[in-house]
Length: 117
Image (tube, rainbow, N blue to C red; front, side, top):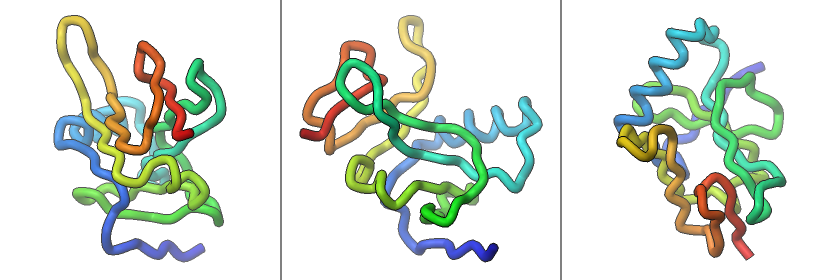
């Protein structure tokens, strides 16, 4: 299966989030064949939840390169994720990946789910 890489990514990943994703890949010994998947799934108190992890490419995925890392996203998820920025917070009260989504019209209190309606 050939992998076509798009020239420009529809999302942004901060330097600190990229650093954490690279660290996770090494610590969990994730194969280089797995790409970073960004997506959405139904659920959460606002309707949709974010997906971020390592996965194999499927036929419905677009592939983007961000700072040397291959990122995949299901074409159907682009409507909800165009322009999103994924960041990493390492504070006293919050630690983890944060999704700054300009398409979200409503979010839950913890920020892990959203809606675009």
